[in-house]
Length: 248
Image (cartoon, rainbow, N blue to C red; front, side, top):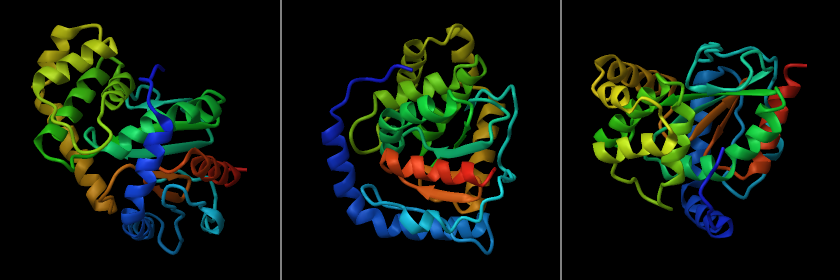
C-alpha cells in the first residue's frame, strides 16, 4: 500500500505538541468509552509519546468479539483474515487529521507485522463529526467499497490530508480521490455518491458510535481494550500483543 512521502520527524513532533493539550481529554474519553463498552473493566490509553505501561495490563483478556465486530468475509471495510485471532476496530472521520497521521505512519507497519501474518484483522467504522463534507466523504468511501476499494480510497484521502485542520472535500475532489485510488468503474462511483442507502448506512454507523460513547477519532478497540488517538507504533504493538495474549 503506497503512501505519500512525509517528513516523519516533523509530524511526530507536531502530534506530540498538540496532544499535550489534548492528552487529558483523550485519557478521559477512553475511560468513559471503555467503561460503556466493557462494564467493570479498565481501558488502556496513552497520549502520543507516552507508554501505555501498566494500563495495558489491566485488560482482562478473553478473546471474545464485541458486538460491533463484523467478521464478514465479504466486508469491503476490512482487511485481513476473517478468522484472525484479534479484530482491531477503528472509528474514523475522513476529515480527521489524527486519523490521517495514523493511516500514513502507523497502519502500514501494523499491516506488515500483524495483518499480513494472520494475527489481526482491521475493521473500519465511519463516523461524521465534522459536518457535511465528512458525511459526503464517508459516502464516497462506501461507494468505492461497493467496488472493493474502500481501504484504497480511505488511504488515498489520508495520504493527501494536510498536517492539521479538517480539509474541505467538495464533490469534484471526492471523484478525483476515486480516480487516484484506482476505482475501476468511475461512472458507477459517481452515481453511488447519490445512493440513499449509503447515506443511511453512514448515519447508522455514526449513531452506533455515539451510542457506544465514541466522541473523538481515531478510536480503537482490540479484544476488550480501548485505545484513543494516533499513538506511536510501539503503543499499538503493545496494545495488539495484549489482545493477542488474551486469545491464547
